[in-house]
Image 1 (spheres, rainbow, N blue to C red):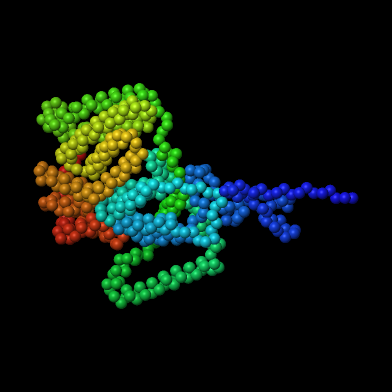
Image 2 (spheres, rainbow, N blue to C red):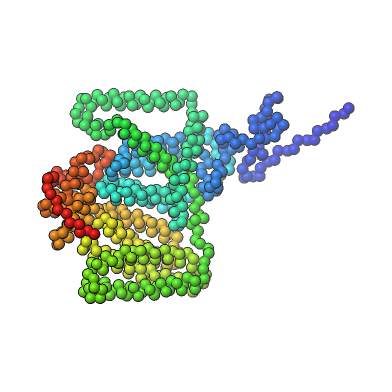
Length: 567
């Protein structure tokens, strides 16, 4: 019997030029007779392999597909050895230098180490032999503003080296969290910046598999026994430092004192604090390095809105609002230029009572007006010349009138503080009012050409600059100075409130006469004596306060009268 000829085997499809190779387009590997190629059944049908990309060379490595899609696909390759080493070194530096209970030099050291680690992680090359993903797309480039956000983060965390006020440094740390997220994730519009800030916590979780794949590749790619050699090197280095350090310390008292100030006590709580700071810092830096390696695509959030309303639908309400603002501003001008006699005759109130009753309402009006301007700028049509002129006139008039309201609110706050004294809350709200005034000036500038893509970033940058300016101005010192000057005029002072200020206020409180000086400085002096600083907590404000109090000690047995006149 003649054998029936077998049909020819189908040709293997070849991918088109420039298209990524897929598993179906790769010719099967030749294997010895009687063996089955990996990833195939005995019948020759390919079976899916869902293992890690590095364990399956035929299938990649591919960019991981996640629920974020192409908006934030993540890096195509695992973390490089340089990235892992930089994160570990920066986390160790943070664990050894970061003081959690006070502002100090350690915060600046940690900030610089973190930025250096991210720079190394960004520009360190991958070792040879690491495959490039077959399917990839270019990550969006971050704007040059990332350098300004990075510098702002370092400056904000460095404020702890200059000022001792804990509330001020807490504001700096919170603001630094926002600026650091903008530095690694980008964002041009207000929505884009909000999304970039919200992605920061998710980046820590997404960085874990990225780091694990990097560690796995190091274990597979490193020479045999490399881990043992590294551990032996570290052990020998530590042993040499301990032995020779102990000998030098026993030989010289000055060196022993320096070593005691640098090396902390090895207590259980110290080790727990080290582990906690190391874990938190390593997680934050891992998320930042992940974001920097593959920033999210926020272009969809940065585009201006396309949905608009009709001309009358936005123009009529805003024109009525402008008319109300104009009437209010007319009244405010008579108050500003009429003086205290005009207010006393027309309102039946003292000038200070009038100022106190209206400041908070004007602050709310200023914030709501900014939201109204943002909504109108987004949804008002700009198709015709009439639309564009109407937007400029209405929004410009509203912003200009609001500037007068801002000036009125600041004038009221000045009178309020002059009568009742200056406090931290009043300093903060006055600073917010000044920042809102700057934002309205920026709105007027943007309305000239109706192009405001730069406005959100500049407005946030102005807020960061205002906070840094507050750090430079020493707010607790300003509060103390204002209250001391007020005491010279009225002989009324709240020594209890002044004693709750930070050591930054000591130079101003040192000008008080007795017994008010000892009453205001007594609790501050006790706190400085009971809680000394090591090198991690080095702080200019506390150091200066200690020098002044050492030159003029405070009597601790004095009875202190208080007057709660700061309302």
